[in-house]
Image (cartoon, rainbow, N blue to C red; front, top):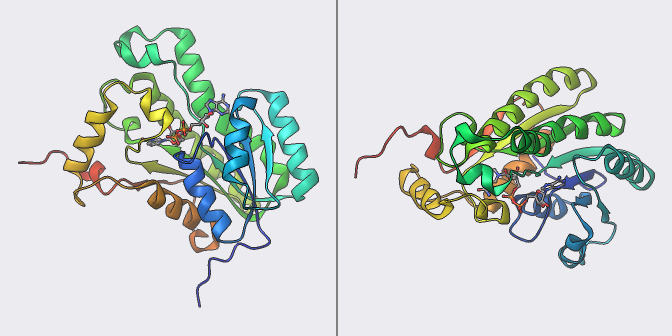
Length: 260
Ligand code: NAD
């Protein structure tokens, strides 16, 4: 019998802001499968929300960590080592670009906005993997979240499209290096979902409606479906999959156009 029992396994989920966060959708599946989960969040103002979300799960660990701070990451991973001993799964659900960088023309992207977007949304995956490496057990798995604007132009996604392209390329390079230790690295390409991060994308509602219309399934994928794919990629069922961009978007990315 195939089983998705993760009891005895430990996971770290980075980037849960509230119950709508895709990181939470994945965490819910991990918790339901019996994993023990640590959460890192950016800024103490997010802590009460996380305390509320995790109240029913004894053994969870909460720690503040800005994903761009080497000091925060060092402190986070030493605490995880102390309390969990090691890790079987890491979820990177962190991204940010200044709103101005998504309101204007891509050609006007400033070096500061480029550096911020690429540093928070792509480089952080590399530093997280570097800090996590000594804790990752054989057979463990790292996932992040990307979007199809890395491959095709999505108006207003601008520098975040470039950051997602960097994240996807970084996934392949990390997978190539970490595979020798039996660690897999993949990224989930999710269709549009209504989260806080999505709210900062100008015209998101139109993008959301159009993706649903274009999709072969005639709707958008759901956060729960992202969670289920996350659970699959983090489990032994996906033991042969690494370095991949795996889509969960109700198929919208395969459509070049749709005739009414
Ligand atoms: P969200 O706003 O719920 O989550 C984004 C998280 O990133 C927040 O918890 C925020 O605190 C965190 N974050 C930002 N800067 C940080 C930093 N410097 N250090 C640590 N944490 C930081 O939104 P979400 O949509 O759940 O985003 C999660 C991931 O999913 C992101 O990578 C996003 O690009 C990706 N994604 C989202 C969609 C969508 O439509 N919502 C689609 C595809 C991919």
